[in-house]
Image (cartoon, rainbow, N blue to C red; front, side, top):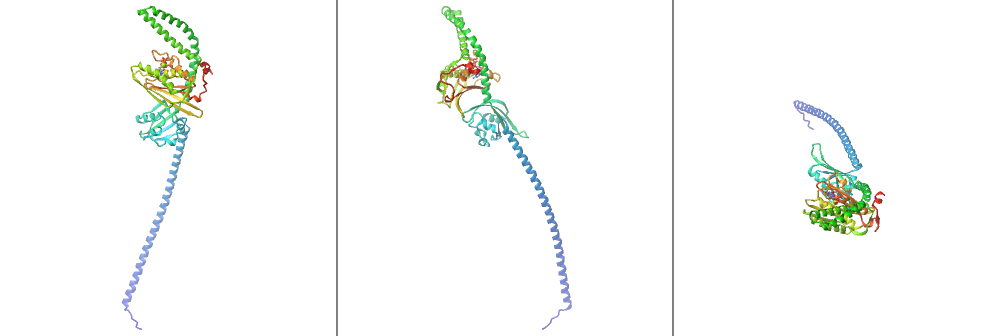
Length: 440
Ligand SMILES: Nc1ncnc2c1ncn2[C@@H]1O[C@H](COP(=O)(O)OP(=O)(O)OP(=O)(O)O)[C@@H](O)[C@H]1O
Ligand SMILES: [Mg+2]
C-alpha cells in the first residue's frame, strides 16, 4: 500500500478554507435567526392588529344591530299608529305607487292591502269610482286638499260618502317624496244628519200646515171662482189684472197642495215596479221642460239596475225624481249634462238600489246645503222651496234615504237609495201617516 503525503502548506490552506466556510455558515445562521425573530415579531403584531380589527368589527356590528332594532321598533310603532287610527290612510310615492295602506282604508274601501301595495294608484283603485282622482290631481298639481266631502263607488256598487284631506310629502331638502290621503267614512253621519233634519223639519211644517192650509183654501177657491166670473165680463187692462189674480190663486193653491202633501198622512199605492221604468217616465216630463230651455242640456243614462224592482208607489216616486231633475235643469242656465245612474249594493241582510242624479250646474254653497231640504228654503225668484222637502218625504215613506253632495260652481249629486223589493218591510196598500212615522 502506497501512502501519499500532501505538502504541509497545502494542508494548511485546506484547513484555513474549512475554518472560513464554518464562519460563513455561522454568519448565515445568525442572520437567519435575526430575520426569523423579526418575522415572529411582525406576526405577533399582525395577530394583535387582527384581534383589534375583530373587536372593532364586533362593536360596529353591535351598533348596526342596535340601529336595525331601533328602526324595526320605529316601523312597528308607526305601523301600530297607522293601525290604530280611525281614519283610512293611503300614501303614494313620486312614481305614483301605493306605499302605505292601513287597516281602516282596507275596511272603508273593501280592498286588501296586498292587492294595492306597490301598484300604480290608477290601476290599484280603478274599480273604485272616483277614489284615485283626488290623489292624482293633488300629485300633479302639488297642492294640499283640506276636508273635502265626496262620493265614491266601491267594489260591489256600494256608494260611500267620505271626507278626504291630502298632504304633499316633502323630504328634508324640500323635495316632493309623495302624497298622503287621510279619509273618513261619512256614510253613517250623512244618514243620521238626514234623518234628524227630516224629523225636526217635518214635525214643525206638519203642525203648521195642517192648521192653516184649510183656512186658506176655502177663501182662495172663492176668490178664484169670482175672478173667473169677472174674466168673462172684463176687457183690456182690467182683464189682464183679473188673469193675474187667477194665476196668483193657482200658485197659492199649488203651495197649499204641496204643504198638505207634506203634512197629511199619505196612502201609498204600492206595486212592484222596475226602477228604470219609473226614472224613464219622469224623464218624459223632464224632456218637456228641457224643450222649453234655450240652453243645451244632455241627459246621460247609466243604469246598472235595468231590471231591478222596488216596491213603491210609482206615481209618487216619479214625482220625486221629476222634482230632482227640474232642480238640476234649473241649475244649468248655461247648459250642461245630467247623468242618471243606478247601482245595487248588497250587505249581509239587505239589498238596496241606489239612484243618482248628477248635474254640472252652479252647485250649492257650503252654508246653504244643510237648508235645501227645509220647507220654503229657496234661492229662486219663482221657487216655493217645497220641492226637495216633498222629495224627501216620498223617499222616506218608501224606507229610502236621500243625500245631497254639491260643489259650488261645479255641480250637484242627489243620491237616493231604496230597499230592493224583496227586502222592504212595506206592505202593499199600507197607509203611512207621516207625523206618527216621524214621532215614533
Ligand atoms: N241640483 C241643484 N243645483 C243647485 N241648487 C239646487 C239643486 N237642487 C236644489 N237646489 C237648491 O235647493 C233649493 C231648494 O230646492 P227645492 O226644490 O226644495 O225648491 P225650489 O226648487 O227653490 O222651489 P220648488 O218648490 O219650485 O221646487 C233651491 O232653491 C236651490 O237653491
Ligand atoms: Mg225645486
